[in-house]
Length: 431
Length: 163
Image (cartoon, rainbow over all chains, first blue to last red; front, top):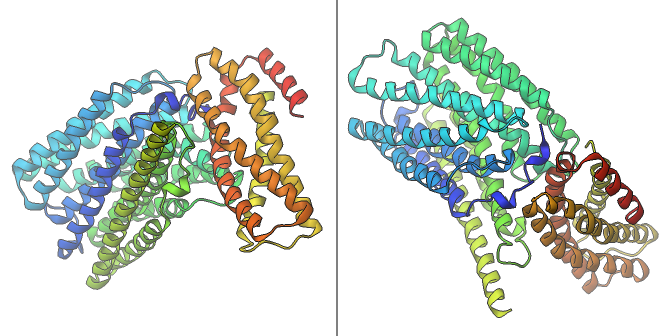
């Protein structure tokens, strides 16, 4: 791996701020809406193992709306910098957003209210947006041979994206046509490819670049990235394949390979942290610790239904730990860090001193988000495991308050950035 | 880090980060001006020496020698960004260094402590963010973009001019 590739050429390859930020703002809005829907449809959360309604709509607002939306916004900015190659025309990125964001909203509305037309139209638009994303990323990666730790995971993410999109479309059509032999099995494979495949592989690949940079730690050796990519690829094929075919032991073998990959990944990250020059970790790292702790826990929880434990509560617990525990914690941690980071990079465009990160990032909203997110994870997990209503409601309320706090943080970062730029413009006019 | 120049710059960053973290601890553990003693005076003099070396010799080496090599290869973006940051860090670091030297001699007053604290906190943040970019960008890129002969020449210049 060529660790210097991240910042080298960064300034030349920064997109106009409005391009990545539209994805980040949409991700934060869908995050908030998802918790609202979960609270509104809280009766359906306990015992949820699939089926249309508020819970499935909220789940897709998080996966498509928050996780994938953030991944798209981050990837379009970070990938060309990391690979030192252009990603593609800005009009294609804008078209991707124009198709994808309304597509996710329409799809979620269709799931929430069982409108088949909205599901089909929303899914089509979403998949069209994802197809542009996969094309842009694939085209960029084809020219890269010096970043195996990042690119192999990104390729796995693209392959998983194709698989999850095909399965997702089949599942949507199956709601009205009922042609799939086993809807639940297809849904489990779709979830594994989406969670560990598409999002998980992007998270691992970008971790190898971002985490050492943020903590000033040593670069993760290429051998670690190659090993986690190999194990993850095999794990995904066996895990998703086993789930789709309804062969539990094969799926369990895939999960064990995934566990091995996650252990190697975490050891690589911890080795980088140990060598770090910055002794005090920044606040966003608290969410990273939660995410890292829940990655292997989610895989352990996945073993239970794969080995024949009842879907209620095990499938629900697995899904919650995967989506809200590992991925949402990781994605909100990275969002919390890269929104002010990019704003600071852009803030010297009009001359003058770049804005300080501490001036761009209000602390209270992220503290509230951390507390509420952690409380939601504990309460909802306990409620799913025990079948208890009140911990569930309290947990969902905590999640909603956390999402509001994160929304306030996002608005405040953007407001402070604009205020810095307005002051710089005024200083330019006077000077 | 497999170039001599990269290793030398990295070593200087380590020293600067250590000094900045020690400054951060000093600022964080004293709400009011700390009393003058020999240990504090020694720390302040050492801080001033490291800061001056970082922003005068180290920045000077990068701008006068290293960046030119990158510009010749068309990598102007990061050079512009880092040079711009040098311009905002340099006066701040010199201000903190001057205040530290004065305080090592005569101690802090409430007013000079407030000035030292404000400038010091801003310096810690700007300089660490700057080093972050250099560590993950500039240093490793030397191995990709600078040939061994030029690396040898640059390292010699660094040892001569920075020490």
